[in-house]
Image (tube, rainbow, N blue to C red):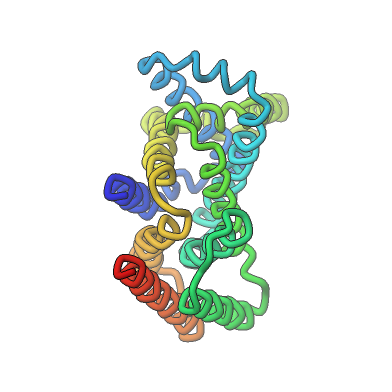
Length: 292
């Protein structure tokens, strides 16, 4: 558990500062950034697996339908999450991405109830109710459904659930996930080349070198996350996630100078309240369990 907690904290700190990295490629379309992210993540992980001499594990996964299905699902889910996140950051919606990842811990509780048969207590259900009220308030303030926040929360929540179902080694699992979407990414590269719409290849050498690093930038927090997911409950893993969106929110206000309305701050205050209620309720339940 302690090992899992350390891995989770490292992963969420790295994810929290990711907007600073993706802002470097503001002039590159989100879909093109995603394709590079997938390809270079695959290359990075292939080298890592080769160094670890784990290709036998990859072959066993490829021959197992029971493993292929959840890995395919997790690969598609994380690709969708990446695309939405990159588009949102580069189009000035860092505040809403922060909201999405604040909601994710509470969504994880619902997913744990439905799919893993975990049983939240009254305090945890209260936290979910408060968070739902916050989403409603924010949606009314926006004048639209906060689709970016909800999409990020749902896609990453389901990704975490899929990781719990596969229970693969971190590096082997991530290579398998990126392999699932690799053909789509390479196909998109071919499409951009045929239509002459590619922009990444015209970047300066230093900027393109930075884009090459997207493989390591993507893979490292996911490796830490995978190790955490194997050692922690889905509910506990989700709660630690508040670290990432807090960093994102601070970046959106103080670095990217996004506007935060009083109503939006009220929504965030309710989310933070829900997290405190959830944390206090979880700690109390743990103490009672130990006492019994």
